[in-house]
Image (cartoon, rainbow, N blue to C red; front, side, top):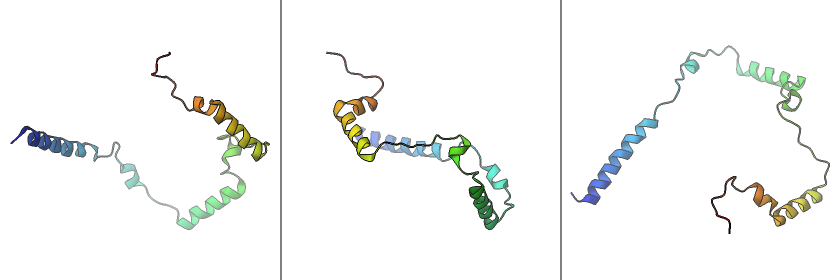
Length: 104
C-alpha cells in the first residue's frame, strides 16, 4: 500500500470515528419523556387568546424590550444612512475590534 492510500485510509477511519462522538445529546431528555399533558390543544389556544386580550403577551409593557420608534421621516433616515456609508462610519462600526494590520 502506498503512503497516499495509507493516509486516505487512516483519514477515513479517523473521520468515521469522530462522527460517533457527536451522536449523543449533551443532556438526557428524560424530563421530556416524563412530562404529562394535562391540557388539550383547545385549552392552550383559549389560554393564549385570553393572555393576548389581557395584554400579558406584550413584551414592550413587561419591560423585556424597549419600544423601537422614530419620529424621523423615511427620507431623512435614508439620507443619514447614505451619509454614514460615504463617511466610513458604517464600515468603522462593522470593523473588527482588533486590527491585525500594522500602521504605516
